[in-house]
Length: 75
Image (tube, rainbow, N blue to C red; front, side, top):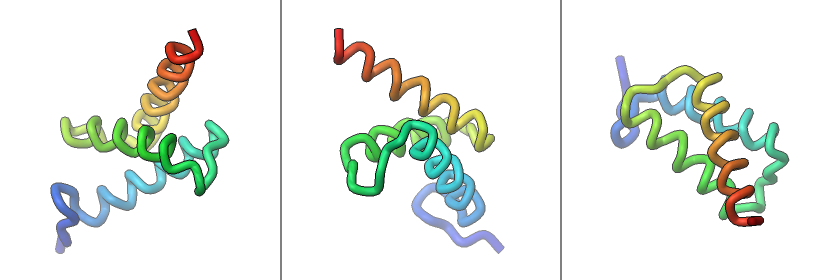
């Protein structure tokens, strides 16, 4: 039985959490960095809302987006 969490069920939430943790680790984003963690989570949630539930792709897309935004802000 699926237990809903907003628009995601429990298995989808678990997958999103796994991908989120992997992305944060790869980017070196710590638990106290709310701004960056929010950006990563928002990217993943946006992708999941359109049907992306592959943990590797979610992580990769969030990492690329994060790095792209960081580069744009530094320029």
